Image 1: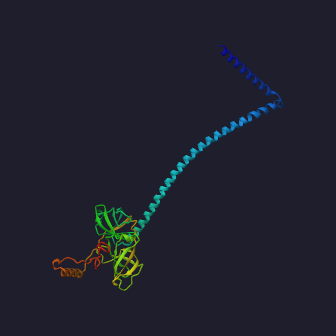
Image 2: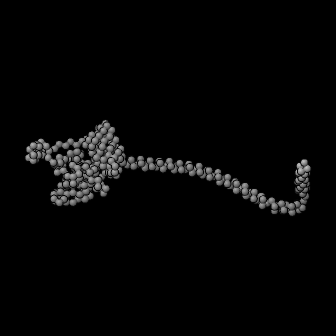
Image 3: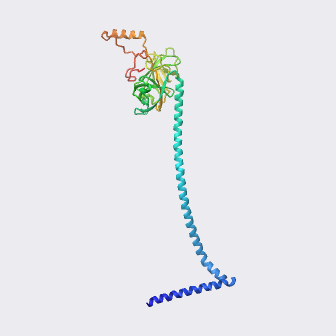
Length: 329
């Protein structure tokens, strides 16, 4: 009880002291400025550092808040800009693809105009054999579109290959670079006959085999254009195959061989044209008679069978040591 009374008395003393101080300060404020100047100086000396500290702390808090708000704003702006960059990147990528597709389609259109005497249907490549090259691939058009086996396929400026199999809405194409492909061809300037033999090992160097060239007058030169022959069994005449890049005399001094650079990029075949017309091949009577005569004389029991000569080129077919396949046309 006594302790509680002492605390109340102490509080009264403090209240009285503060009241007296307030009254004193009020009285001082009415005095002449010269009288209160020392008081102001003392109070300013004591209070100013405290005010500076408080002001500095307040400024720091304000700056921290502003920085936090700025960081949030910058983060939102950065996310917005990143979204725009992603959108523009995707749009640019699509434009590049569209431009490349347009370039390919223009080339295909020019090829269509170049061989305008034939009816054609366009198709896209939808599958291929494993590997870097399009030696055997599938397109998205088939018998429903009028495509049949042995129809010629062109793209990229010239001959791609030939249709080997068809379904209702798909077809398989064997390219001229395939090891099993042989094309009866000729030199466009001289009409000298030759064979273009596929070889996947050579195509890595950008070449195809040119063999059995009959250049008796030595008029064929490097750079000459090679096209499909009019005596070909399966390929329509005059379709560009490539250009001679090397030519040498064979050991028999009767024929020549070398290499050509194909006009088609067989690493990037995407769209093709299928010619909806098949080559009508009619062997000459003399050749048929000679074949039957040779066969009969060789083995009378086999009369009526054909000889081993290639009906497409009129020359002996390549053996397995050269290409591993019989000429296909």
